[in-house]
Length: 366
Ligand SMILES: Nc1ncnc2c1ncn2[C@@H]1O[C@H](COP(=O)(O)OP(=O)(O)O)[C@@H](O)[C@H]1O
Ligand SMILES: [Mg+2]
Image (cartoon, rainbow, N blue to C red; front, side, top):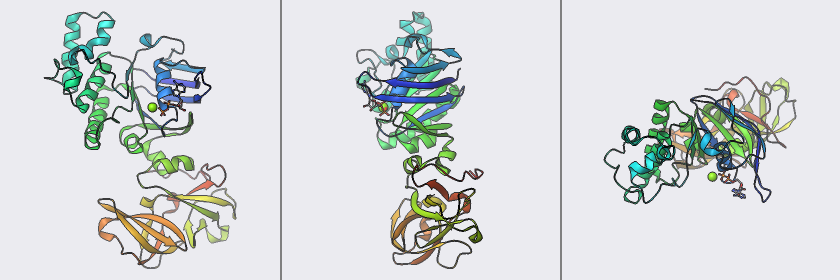
C-alpha cells in the first residue's frame, strides 16, 4: 500500500494545452480519493500522468515515497481502469483478468488461483470462460476492475468507471465499489464529473477547473463550505443560492442584507458595507409562515418541485428568486406568504470579484 505525492505538476500537450497546470496533491495510503470537475478540466490527463501514460512537463509524482516521474508505466506499481474498460475482445474473462500477470511471467497455476479469487471478490464466478462481448455492461466493468486488482498494484486509478452504466446499475456498482475499496484497503484515485458520485464514494475530493485545484476537502467540507463560487455552483444536486448582498453595520449584529431583507452571517473581519456574494444552500434555509426572531427575508412561494422525500420551493423575495428545500409534507402552495432564514454558520460570504470565500469563520461543519 502506498500514498501518492504530487508537487508542482504540469502536463502540457504538444498543441500547447496545459491540461494539468501546477498541481499539488497528497493522496494518503489506503485513501479513496476523487478527482472531480467538469469535462475537459484535466482529470484524465492527471490520472494518465500518475500512471506514466502521459509525460509530466513540470513537477514530480511520487508513489510510496519513490520518485516515479520519469519511470515507465509498467514499473510504477499502478493499476488503471479506463473509461471504456479496454478489455481484450478475443480473450476470455479469465485471460483478461490474468493478462497483466502473464506479461510479468507469473506461473500459470498462480494465475489461475488469482483469477479464481479475484472473480469471486467481484462476483464474476461462472463467467470466467465467457468473452467480453457476451457480458453486460456492469459485468464488463467488473472484469476491468478485476484485472486491475489482480495485477496487485500499489495504487488503483479509475477513470469514470461507472459512467457507461445506466442510472440504476450505476448506483449498485457505486455501493459495490465503495465496499470493495474498503475491504481491499488499496489507495484509489477515482475520476468523475458527477458530484453526487464523488460525495457518495470519496474520503476526500479534489475539485478541479482548467487543470488547477479549486478545493480539496472531505465531502462534508466541499458541500457545506465551498471555498469559492465555482465549487459552490458545481457541488450539490440542488444549486446553491448565490445572491448579491452587503455586510450590515456592526450595530445590527452579524448579518448581511440580501434581496428585500437580511440573513444572519458571521461577518468576521469583512467590513460593514462590503458588497459580497452570499451563498446559502436550499437545504439550510428554513421556511415559516410567521415572524422569525433575527434577520430574515419575506417572500411569496412561486412554485414547488417534487424531489421525492423533499420539495424544492422557489420563493420570490422582492424580485429575487431563492430556492428552499422543505420536507414533502410541509410543501406550501404557490402564492403563500413565507419568511426565510438560515443558521448563521450556513450563510457563506464570497468576494464579489474573485468568488473566493471570505470571513473564514470556524468551520461549523457537520
Ligand atoms: N492528447 C491530447 N492532445 C491535446 N490536447 C488534449 C489531449 N487530451 C486531452 N487534451 C485537452 O486537455 C484538456 C483536458 O482534457 P482531459 O484530461 O481529457 O479532461 P477531463 O478528463 O477532465 O475531461 C482538454 O482541454 C482537452 O481538450
Ligand atoms: Mg476524462
